[in-house]
Image (tube, rainbow, N blue to C red; front, side):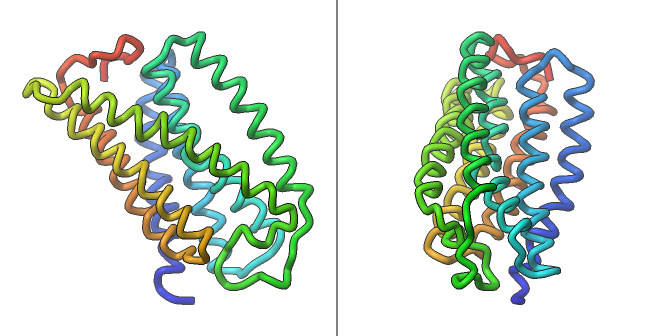
Length: 233
């Protein structure tokens, strides 16, 4: 295995630290549903990189592959996006979107679990081509677009609202970092569809580092958030 194949181990270890930080933040403000979803998001993000790490160490097997596909293709950045939804939208709207999302995810996960696997195309790189029910791969772009719209779009929207006011400089740059960090794994996921799985490993690490950086910049900023749903950080 090339060195880049071991990057998910570093990503997973960093996610453990990120989880510790954001979980404690959420427990201080349990009413902040956006923090709850971001905490879940760090867990699902690390689930995908954990499976990638196990694949590097132990090699390919059907359970690891399906877990990787579920964690990466369907769960990866979605809870982080859901956190942004609870930050920016009314709770009723966020709850409706959550209910729809959960139904879609349950159906998608069941399909992955039930799909036969074409082991003849297995290689040292994890790739969705192994799924014989190839139509499942048509679902993932919609889930990924959903995540991009709300995680990346939400962060850029917040950055736009803070732009031009020195009082909110920290919140502006924090949201820019989160937006860029949210884009990177999507680029890596697209590369995976063309067989460049190792690109995903690099973008996952860079992405979570930037998201954490942005989160910490905002968390340590003393200015008052413009978002009604945001508890003072």
